[in-house]
Each structure stands twice: as C-alpha cells, then as structure tokens.
Length: 497
Image (cartoon, rainbow, N blue to C red):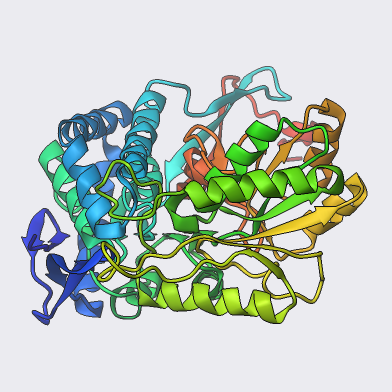
C-alpha cells in the first residue's frame, strides 16, 4: 500500500516528501505500506481547507449531509472483509475482533444517519404566552480528530461521523501504527462524494503532525483518544485558548467484581473476555478481578484454565483468540509491569511473557500473566494502566471492601459486577466510580447509542461516541415574540418611562 495525505479533495505526498514504513506486529518482515511523514506545513494546508469548506457544509441540510455518510456506509459494507483483514494484518487484532471493529464504525455512522431525521433541538415553554422559545444546535467549526491504533476504524468514526453529520469540517490524524486503516477511511469518504475540504487527513507522528494540529488557532474542537500522559497535555494546551473545546478519552484501570453468589461460568467467561481480548490493549479491558473470598479458589482454578486455553498467534488465523501486542515498546512495558508485580510480592499464577519459536519469532506475541495480590494502596501494579495481557486477582471479604478497592485507583472508565443479587448490583452501581457499567457481562462491548467516557484520569467527562454531538455543537436559545408589545421574563418591564 502507498498512502497519501488527503487535503482539499486531493491525494498528496507530504510537503517534505518524507515517508515512513508500517510493518505488521505479527511479522515484522511484512511491510504493510509506506505513508507520508507530515509536519506543520501539511497540517496548515489541511486546516485551511477545512476552514474554507465550513460555511458551505454548515449550510447544507443535515439530511443531505447524512445521505453522503450513508453512501460511505455502503462502500464500507462492500469492502467489509478486505478492511477487516487489513486491520488484522496492520494492527494485530484477530479477525473476529477486526470485523467487530468495522461493524462498530458502521453502526456509529448509521446512528448519525438516523439522527438526521430525528428532532435536533427542543421547543421549550416560555413564561410569556406570546413567545415561542427553542433550543437549537450549531456546529462549532473545524474538528481535529486524533485517534489510536487499537480501534483504527471504530474510534475514528466515533469522532468523524458525529462531527461531519452536524455540520463541522474535520482534519483527521490517524495513528502512525495503523495508517492503512486511516487511509481507507479517507478513500471511502472521498468516493462517497464529500465536497472538497470537508474532510482532510494527514499522516504522521504525534510530535510532527499531531501537536501542530492541536495548537492550530483555526481548530475549534480537539477530539482525542489515547493515553493519560498525552491527553492531559492536550487538555492543558487547549485550556489556554478560550475558543477551543476538547474531549479526551484516556484509558482505565478497570475491574470486574465477582460476588459469592455469582454464576461461575458467566463470571469466568466475562473475565477472560474482558482481560484478554485485543491482548488486553483496550482502554476498557479488565486488569483487576475483584473476587469475594468464598468463591476465590474455584474462580481462580477456572479462570486459569480458561487463560491457558487461549490460542495466541497469527491474527489472520480464525482459530486464534489473541494476536500480538502492537510493538516492541508494548512488549517492554508489559514485561516491566510483570516484574513489578513480582517485586511487590504478588503470587504469580500464570507466568506470561514474550512468546518465541515457530509462528512467533517475527512478531510481538505475549502470553497472559495472572497473579493474586491483596489490595495495597501503595502498589503500582494494581493502580497503573498496563495495556497488555496482565491481570491481577484481588480478594475481598465485604461489599464495602470491594467498593473501596474498586474506587482506589486514579481511573474510572468501565466496570462490571457479577452477581445474582439485584440489591448488590444497585449498591455498587451507586457507589462505584465509572463511566460504563455492566451487570453479568464483560466490561467491554460498548454500543454506539450510549455515552462512552469516564471519570478521573479516564477522561474529561465529555464522552465519545453518540454523545460527542454535545462537544462538536453548541446549544443556542432562540425566542420569538408574536405580540405587538414587549413582555420580558421575571415580570421585568420594557416600557420607557
């Protein structure tokens, strides 16, 4: 694949003419493609094009904008399997998950297409009988969408579809780990017939292309999904510009809470799925399993059996449950945290590490690492995000202790409780800190019509997905007087004495 930037309806190389190569994490000898290494000059052209296209795009009917997005959906559906296979090859997600990723991006776009014929404001009662009052939405302008590699189609469409449908223009910077999927997004939108400049894409690194985009004075909204370290700097940067809005989703240290009365089959399946899908490289993945002592031994035995059965290997092989982690840096980080667990006194139950040998030699494959550890407020390993197949099992005695353990981290994204007692489920719903909660389910599997965002280090409180509409539009009040005189609210007179 030979990738290009997409600016003002045209395919372009970077101004510097520099490029970078992308190799598969499953086989570092497999060259996926070569892409432009963009810098601030490319960003400048993309933002200028988006700004120029904004008035005409904003003025188009919501329904007409949605019809273009509907054509985009149909193009993706025609290419569904090809896109999923590219994702598996480029990002290391197994085919089943890659197909789910494409499906989620389709669903997000379909959701916004459907909203085009639904109410898009409110008629609000006025204190004055002769007045009609309304709440209307207006697009904010140019949206910068900076997205991660682990969901290289779904998360871009969480950001792009709501932005475009509501009348904003977009500059998209896909992850340099999955530039091929970003390229396909641009190709489908181009073929769907978007006017020039409405959607633009620049490839490149965060330092060379991402930060110039974030700092550009003509960008009105920054939408970012990634690490807390980067997201916190973005928030600080955007806060200095009174005109800008930012929505950041920044990871989690998520937990599944298993009570003594749990259906054990359901609990184990939910835990294995939440911990090891995408090799644990999800912001929503469960890296803590908080298990009541009465069921602990049985849960541990069955969870370990499930973890040992996981097939790790080529993401294009339908039989495999888990592919590689994304790069050597991810391998090093997971191994570092595995060692921290040992150093902090964890009882290692399944000693995962880098896999080598037939089928693994040229990829970043790792096996699950599982350990038992009492909650310790000073522990790093059960408080910091690892982003890999690394899971702690933490015992508890009482529901009060379980809630304390759950909340005693700096993140608050996803959470699941496994119990047959609806009173317990309600209590933890009310007292645990999270953005997405589940009962008798994995803590992964968000749906596009629901908010996606968390608390504390997990985000800004302005969620992604469908409710991103609240970030990329602003609400305005519109009041019309149908009388021949002026009557003001609160009994205030407009008469001049």
